Structure formats: C-alpha cells, structure tokens
Length: 430
Image 1 (tube, rainbow, N blue to C red):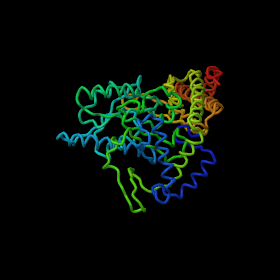
Image 2 (image 1 turned 30 degrees about the vertical axis):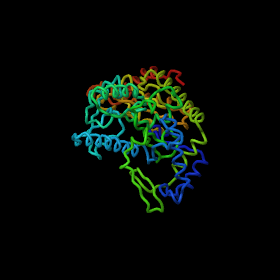
Image 3 (image 1 turned 90 degrees about the vertical axis):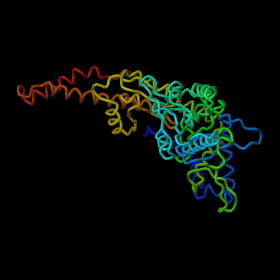
Image 4 (image 1 turned 120 degrees about the vertical axis):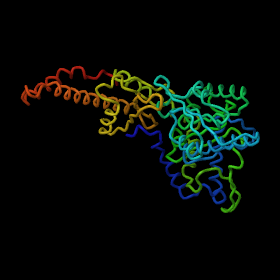
C-alpha cells in the first residue's frame, strides 16, 4: 500500500462513472459545454466562500481550476510578479531583480516557478527543532524587490502548518514601515481541504487582508483523482487583467488564465460531485476519521520505544524518526517494509536540518485503524530482522578467524542471537 503519496486513490463508483463521461468533453470549450463551465465556476465560488473571500452579493469569485497545485503556484507566482513589476514601473523604479521568499521545506514546484520565470529564490533554512518557515526567518529575507512570501499550510516533510497569521502580521508591519506592498500567498495544497473542517477557528485564509492568493489540491484531501488543483485570488485586482487571455476561435469570447488549454472535464465534474455529495459535514467527518486513525498510528509508533514523533498533529499525517540509528536507519526500515508491500518513504529534511532522517505515513480515507496495526507489526518485524543482521555482523567481526573453526563461528553467532532475542520482543503497542 502506498503511504507516501498525498494523492487520492479511491473514489466512489458513481464519481468514477461521472469522470469517464467527462473525459470526452473538452473542459475549455465553454460554448460547446456550457454546463461544464458553470460547474467549474460553482467550484471556484464554493472554495472562495470556504476560504472567506470578501465577496459582495452577486460578485463572481476570482479563481481557476488547474492540473494541480504546481500549475496553481505557477499562476500565483506570475500574478505576484506582474503586480510587483507594475508598481515598480509606476514609481519609476527598476524591476529587474524580483525575489520570492519561502522556507527550504517548500515543494519542488516553487523552485521550478522561480527558475522558469526568472525570480531570485530567497530560501530560509529550517532547523531540527523547527522544520518550517517562521516570521523571524522570513523577515530577514524580504526587501523592496520581494514579489511575495509563501507560507505553507501543511508541509510536505512533516505535515506542519506554518504560522500564517504570524507571517502575515510581520508583513503588514514591514509594509507599513517601509512603504512596501509585499503580499502573502498560502500554499494550502494539503491543508486547504483539512483546516476548514478540523480547525475552522484557525486564521490562515482570506480573513487575513494581506493574503492575496491561495492554491489547493483537489486531488489530495479534496478527494479527487490526480489532475485537479485550484488557484484563488482574494479580489479581482489581485489577478492582473493583462494575464487573462480572451479567445473566440471556439465559438464565443472565452477568458483563460491557465498554463494548459485543452483537457477533459472529468476532474472538475468529480470535484463538484464531492462537494455536493459530502458537503461541509461530510468532509468534516472524513477528515476527522483520518485524523483519528493518524493519532492511533502515532500512539502505536511512540509506544514501541523506537521512534520519536516529529509531526505536530495538524494533518492526518504521521512523521517519525528513529531514536537510535546507530545500528540501522530509516532507509533500512523503508527497504524492509517495501518487501512487505508497504511504501513508507524515508528522506532527509530540507536545508538546515539535512542530518535529520524521518519517515512519513499519509493517512487517507481508505487507511483504517486495522491497517495501522498491521503496519506497526510489520515495522517491528523489520526492526527485529535488522537487529539480527547487526548482531550477525558484530559477532563475525569480533571472532578471530585464525583462532576459530568456521563451525565455532556459526555456534557463537547462534548463541549471541539467542542472548539478544529476549530484548527484541514487542510491547503490546496495538
């Protein structure tokens, strides 16, 4: 079972049927398929309302569907760069050195965006005791050429929410002090479909006036198959109009602000199905159940005595590290679990905490408490095997080859194993 990926791998049969029907409809051909456009616009409006966009009665929300959060981040980055450039031109200031500020724990798409669009990367290092961007770390990197700061709602490394409000307040303070206009973007690829249902009181979205754009992945905790993301802007003026293209060669005037063009309507239809099918309460129950299963796994792993938990319980994600890695590493456990059919990634943390190796389990709606028990038992079996391998090597190294017959070496190894096995028994963790 793949516990590495955030991407949805299960949908209801009815949703799958609707996706198949939508595959043959070109999502961008609004004149031919006007209801697909209506479905898309309803999804944008529902998400804008979920994230507290300041919409007036009858006002159209500003946003677009994307292939995923990577495309959404590209679009948000373009909008931030263009608004910064326009302000610099209007003030008669140079605009050749734009920079973007984020933590070293960002997903790789942020590096792609900066490289593709010629934006200087200003990346704040993390640390073993704090694996995310903080207001203090961001403050040291911003200046008049900063097009924006990105805060992550759900870090890929350990699922932690960055303190969006603290970073927001710091930017408001610095903007007022220096006459800048640096916006805050929230990368809510994972947390955007969790926080509104699990932590509705948390202020991270358009309730904060300097949050100008948000991206979210429908194909993660939005519960749609791969290929669905969303980019939303606080108000229409936060998306420069000259970045929106108008075409009429499909039969009528159509606005477009995407990096892609033709694509099937299946994912958009599936997102709309989920929103209608589950509603707010349905999403809340699904996320609450996943959080409960994650907590069960977290407690079971901690009870083994082998691991320390490094996530902050913000998301249905469990990140953990070995307390003692002198005999074997998380990478060794990863290999043993793979042989048992589990894909549990082991990886080094980002810049500033590279020496820290952790493992991660993404707890999705199809991961049950029974599966959590099975996983912990297989982790303990992997550890027992690795301990025995270590003892074998240790015994062989300690045996002088010139003084003992091969049979004696084997007997010594077997005796050593028996002495250690009493310490390898599991402690009722499940």
